[in-house]
Length: 473
Image 1 (tube, helix red, strand yellow):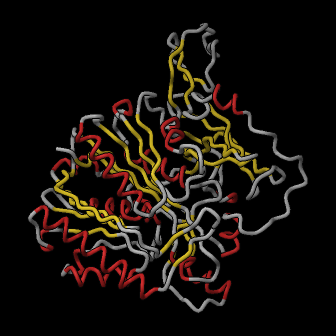
Image 2: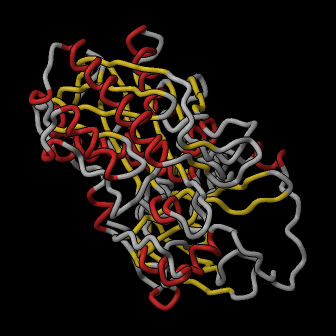
Image 3: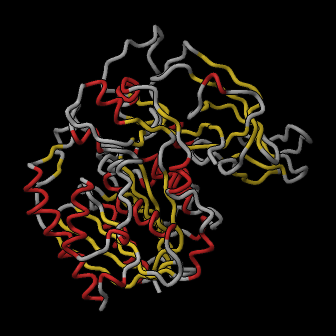
C-alpha cells in the first residue's frame, strides 16, 4: 500500500518569549509561551532542507524519485526552490521537482499529489517537505502567534510505516488570512467571521467526509492533527466533531507557534511520534478549503524512531535575548552597515560550475590511499596519486573544531562572523563559517556538524552554502 515511509521535522534553535513582545510594545495581547524563530541565515528553503535531511536519515537518497516543496514564503517568486533542495541533498537529476504555494493548505496539497503519483506508479518514493517563515505586522496577535518550522514526509510503496486509509478534500474560495503580491505582511479578517463561517464550518465537513468515506468514527482515531490559526478554534472544531480533547494533537502554539504551511505536517509528525502500530492518525490542512487524510500505523514505525522529529527539536533550544534581536534578524529595521566595500555580484556561472562541491558539499577520496579531501583534488595531498579519486560526501559527516576566529569587521547582518577550520571524522578538513553558536561559548575541540544555510542576497540572487554548528543532539 501507499503511505508514509519516514518522517522528519525541524524547529529552529532559537525561541522568543512572547513576554518580550509585550515588553517591547506594551502589548494588549499578553499571549503566554514562546515562539520558534529562524536564525538570520535561515529561511523556508533551508528549514525545509533540514526537515528533509532528518526524514531521509539512513535511507539511500538515490531511491528518491521526486521532491515537493510547499511554502507561502519561498525565497523566489520565479524560480524553483525544490531544485535547490534536491541539489543540496545530492539527489539524482532524473527526478520530479515541484514547488507548491499560494495557500496554507499547500503542504497537504503536496502530500496528496505525492500520494497520487506513487499510486499511479510514476514514482516509488517522493519526498514532501514544507516550511514557512511568515511576517506579521508589529504589536498584533499574528506577531504573537507566528512561529517558524518545517516538516518532511517520504511517501512510498516500500517499507511503509503508516498506510494511507483514505482522504477527503474540500476546495472553496474564502478570505480569512491572505497576502497579496503587493504585501510583505499577512492580512486577516474579523475573528468571529473566520471562526464561524470558515474554520468551524469547513474543517468538520472535511473531517466527517474522510471518516465516512473510510467507514470510521471519531473514536477510531487515536490522534487528530489539525492546522489552526488560533488554539481556541481547534477546540471548537473538536467539540463539533465529538473528539475527546485527548485525541487532539497539541497544536504547538505555546512552544513553536503557527508555522503556516508546515503546521499540519509538523503536527502529523508529532502525532506519529506519540502513537503506535495499529493506531489511526488523521491530519487536516486548512486554507481555501481543507484536506483531511487518515493513516494507519504499522510496526514499521518503530524503525524510524531515531529521527530528530518534533520532540528532540523542541527539547533543544536557546532563548533569544530580546525582541530587538528578532527585528534585526528579520530585516525589519535599517541598520547602519559596516564601512566596507559592497558585496561583489554573485557569479551564476561559478554557482553552476561548482554545484557538486559547493551546493552538495562533495569532495574527493583518494582511491590509492583512502584520504578524503575538500574540495576535490586532482593530486592527492598525501600520496600524490594523480586523478585517482572518487566522490565523497562531507555533508553528513561530523567533525571537531580545529581553530576559529571571530571577525567583528566582516560584512554580515549579525556580527561577528565565526570563521572555522573543521576536521571531519574519517579525515578531511574544511574552512567555513559557524552558525547557531554563542561566541563566548565557542571553543577549539568542540563537536560540530554541517548545516545548509543562507549566505547573502545580491542583485536578486540568494546565495546558499554550508556552515558548521555545534552538534544539536
